[in-house]
Length: 160
Image (cartoon, rainbow, N blue to C red; front, side):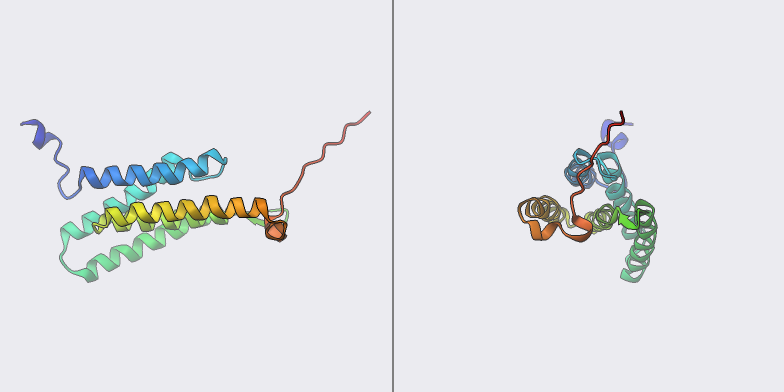
């Protein structure tokens, strides 16, 4: 057995897995540096897992109906995963952005599985612009910091 046979991934590609790692690292890094759920490891694994399911479906059947079934099942599973990230605390819902990021990560994995590697990188950059740009806008404009987006200042009481 030679090295090329040893490194053969069958229906999967090293380029696609590299793309999964790149996209997952970019989005996961943004989330992890903010202390949010879905950090680098989770992001890479969500994209890669979705890619593996879609690439396997494409390799097993030439029917787009079969591919659509797998896409539907992945969407259902990812919805369950995203629901687990959300929680309520003091009557407010937290983790909605992280749940939405899980949807985006799965969508990127689907794109990669269907061969749209370059498009997935461009959409990763768009997602980062939303995450970073809206945060910057919320910090700059008082009117965007109302309701659930209000920054709460913690006050400490010192007892005597």
